[in-house]
Image (cartoon, rainbow, N blue to C red):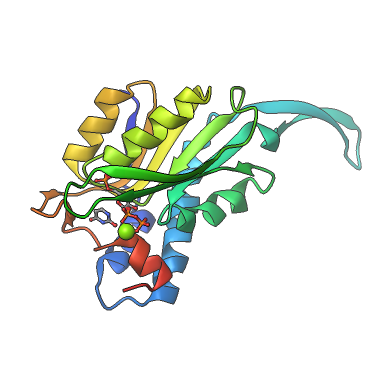
Length: 209
Ligand SMILES: O=P(O)(O)OC[C@H]1O[C@H](OP(=O)(O)OP(=O)(O)O)[C@H](O)[C@@H]1O
Ligand SMILES: O=c1cc[nH]c(=O)[nH]1
Ligand SMILES: [Mg+2]
């Protein structure tokens, strides 16, 4: 699938396996989510724009590329996406951070928006949307719809675990969005949870269960 990258790096797979374990506690879970986001971000930011700056080395003056951090925005989908933000900021500390608050209705599984604040203007920025779980894809599609309505153009979407249903839905709704997935799982269950998945990512990151 064009614009879809599914990671097969052993470090990412190893860390995802620890996340899946129901006995992994909140501290370790949170740290792993951040580490995986950083590893995925390293690859997802491969095409980040750079600008030449003048630097004096001990030998001579040269023109050398640096990342224009102000051109990146990280936009987590609350709550669980928040857990990935510091992993990206460790790579690009000067990136701006927006927030989109969405929760899934427990019965219909439809996303409901409760908060949105994006860096302004957003048009010129590369935007990385983070959410560890891409299940039905409803939240991902709604978040990207929203960012596009606000003028966002260069959008990347990063999820640690995806169900085939959610990946297909997001890719079909937004084929221009570059999607990065840590692992593609088997399917959704009757409650729209990912199988085998890792349970409720937000609850596990914030210890709310
Ligand atoms: O692809 P979907 O079917 O839309 O499901 C995925 C969404 O569900 C979870 O959020 P949740 O509603 O549990 O909110 P939370 O992050 O606050 O726990 C998850 O973090 C995604 O945002
Ligand atoms: O498996 C799932 C599906 C949606 N949200 C989660 O946190 N986990
Ligand atoms: Mg949740």
